[in-house]
Length: 106
Image (cartoon, rainbow, N blue to C red; front, side, top):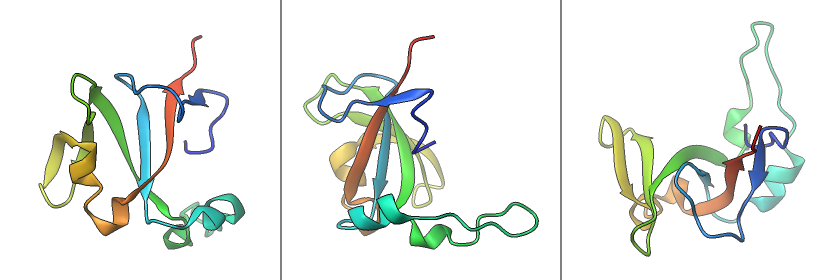
């Protein structure tokens, strides 16, 4: 979905809106995002997923505050939670926002 330009459009420079997808990952890995080539085994499982720095997606749930609230699955919280983006980004593996996407109108 990160590279799905057919159904989503990048809105990094626009104000966040409820429903936007926020893609997070390790800081400073932009080169790996553009050069990543997926490798699958015979069962269709992605083998080199650790090489792709974008490893988390959340959905903007509220923009009422300066720091948007993000709905996401959290291993630390053992389920789904809604947290400010800045709180999620304190985790090293979610430190950088790589993209924000919005569903294209039909």
